[in-house]
Image 1: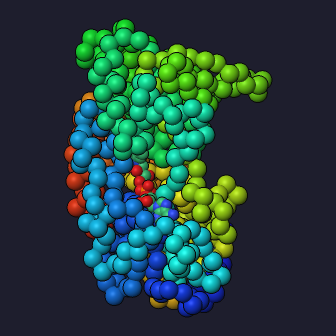
Image 2 (image 1 turned 180 degrees about the vertical axis):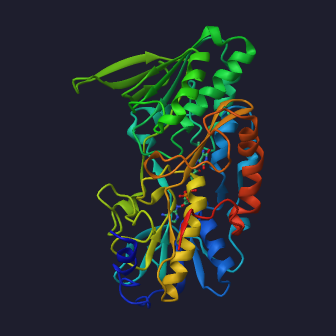
Image 3 (image 1 turned 90 degrees about the vertical axis):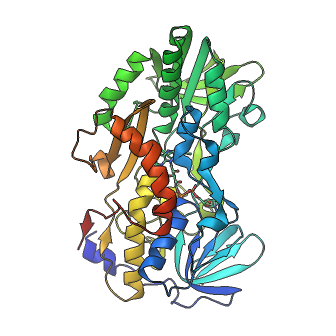
Length: 428
Ligand SMILES: Cc1cc2nc3c(=O)[nH]c(=O)nc-3n(C[C@H](O)[C@H](O)[C@H](O)COP(=O)(O)OP(=O)(O)OC[C@H]3O[C@@H](n4cnc5c(N)ncnc54)[C@H](O)[C@@H]3O)c2cc1C
């Protein structure tokens, strides 16, 4: 579809700009107050302070998840990754502290779990994704004990670091489920930082390290595989592809994997461990998956370039829940925010949508304490480096960006609508 056609393909709203009778009505309703929800609200209000905008968000805490990998590697304080939700809600936005439960896009309504509803002229859907711990048998009973941990949880990332410090010999297994997952590099980042600690402590030779991934390759963008393989070799890590964690016996310290063979058959294999770092399977949140907004896979269906819903013209989506095939990262959200803010306001003004998403996402791969391979890429794995440096080289500068600058910028810039390094490459 051409861009002209994209702009003209849908009417501006599902059923006219006025919502049906409901408890409250807003110009814009944002579902989810995470990275995407707070960021896009701040950016919309910075452009147009008069907007009547509400955020539907049940939680009272806001997290900076990208630093949890550093916490698990002993390089960041978990307390610095969380702030009260009230402190990040942008000034001028209303906070509806409730759980969204469904959508009636034909009536321009968001339904809430408490039985209420909120009406909108334009809707932005960004409630993230769901970590499906329960899909691995026995996992929930043993998380946080018996050597079983995950950097994907605020509560567990510090336990990762305790396990890493305590392990002097034995077997450490790191897992990666089928895609899509948020920050596809995070499962192996946990491995590299753990190995780096064991190497510095002189015990790496006594720790058997294994990375079990459901994927067929170490990383989805080929340009970054060679430097990563150098670290895999340096840490003597054993890579097992097509290997999917399906069951954990915590007290027995045995992990069960379904390993896919070349002929398509699957073999269940039991592996003992002293430490098990699990990346959980990840799914669209149920209230989007079961709604008219979902695509066949359950993600919120958008045009990948405009981020406008493919069937409902007054709805946009961004962040982990949206169907665009980018790397699900906060870095992607940083660029998507500009696209949604500019296109949504253009539609409100009766103009054509001016801004197009190039699929940018970034994964700062923490290959050792003090070195990062800054993987930045767009749709189709096209390299999109921010800096004029070879992106495949591990750098201290990129570590400083990841561990110092980005967390600071997140709280003080990103969540306040300051769009540094966020301009889309494609505007007209
Ligand atoms: C371990 C780890 C490492 C990562 N590393 C990086 C990295 O290095 N670089 C990077 O760029 N990104 C990284 N990420 C990914 C990044 O954190 C996410 O991509 C980003 O947070 C997505 O933003 P989001 O707003 O879509 O989802 P979230 O930030 O998860 O926010 C979703 C919000 O929606 C709310 N919500 C849920 N259900 C409902 C409901 N029913 N009604 C209303 N609201 C609801 C939630 O409470 C939450 O506040 C990492 C993530 C993890 C877990």
